[in-house]
Image (cartoon, rainbow, N blue to C red; front, top):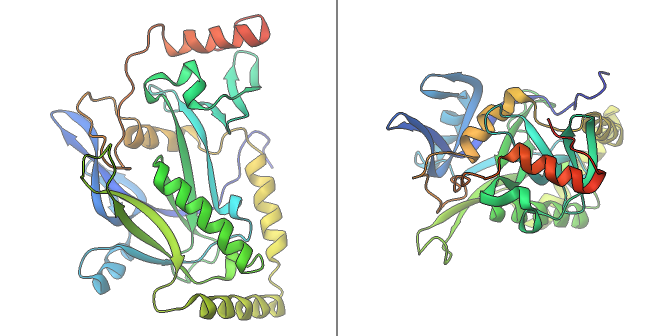
Length: 306
């Protein structure tokens, strides 16, 4: 296994609740009130739709707001990873990733572990430069039992809801998350910050038409069937944990460019009343690199960021 390269679940496509459009010569994120499932192929007009997008939409009056899914792993934190992430907006690469206690940061001397005060207490996070950032991998359909679709979000409501649901479902199912019949569900709410305009976030629930008891029974039966066939879920979770820990950052530079474009827009008129659209960072003086160097100097006694 290549050291320094995070081995992440194979991805077949993306799930989003918004898109990037071109307006006045600038590419800006635009909110939506439904899911969109895309492939991994991008054209000049955006990401190409995955065949599942139209297939699932047919039964929902052309508004895709529920997606039947299963999970790859029994461990909640393997299915959904969330952390504070600071991206370089020019190169798209992640510079610093933390959990509110410690962080990993790119420096001239390589990767360093430093204290992480969270964005509210970090001078580097001014102007929303650093945000909570979550990634959820789910299975859609039965064609590829290890091929997932990824939902990425910097929305607080989605991150908090998904994290809570997965922990709860893991607890009540006896650690059988990978066997539960679930679905992604789009929900809306209004807040003071949205000025009464609905914002949309993602929840994960028991699949429509099933009671919680039915879903738990199905999970138990599915687990027994898998064990009888030789399916080793514990070994799969262990392999995934090793893969994630093999690299400092989960997202590659190739993926990060699209992430920065969608979640870290630079246009001054970028909308901010939806989870799929976030305020651009205010110009930082001194520069981001200078701030990183300054903070690294305070911790280590010498500048260390390149």
